[in-house]
Length: 207
Image (cartoon, rainbow, N blue to C red; front, side, top):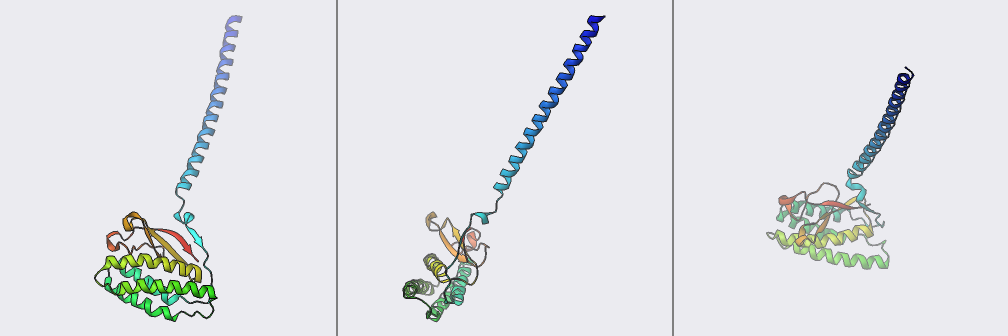
């Protein structure tokens, strides 16, 4: 009888010990799973991070120059080419040529006058090529590529009244890529037009 009681007590003790170990193991497993889920959630959030976090922001230098009209013609040029409209591109290029002499340079330093003169000459050359090439939209787009670099330097060094977005197309010019400037984040690719209107991504903000 004593042996039976002892055996029952031993079995009970083993059962309690086993139950306790199972609970501890379950608790440890649940904690580990919760930690893993938390890590997955954090990684997922990082993966969903908006592209805005990767955009470079540039503070433009402010001067007395009012580039609003000139830049407006440039944006109309990109819209014309994004719509495959070579004739409207001619009109907007002529608008650029007319707006260039209107820029007030009285507040410029000697260095700024020199820099502006170089950019003005280059912009004028590219605008003239675009204006002279109705019916040859590929040639117009080649000069938009070069002109966009001039406008980028112009706005960065002489100021902008509103945020301007630099949008990059990686496929243009045999995958060398090219960019254009826009008032909006909306992608309307002037290098491919309607064929690939949404090709591009915002690289920088100029403020």
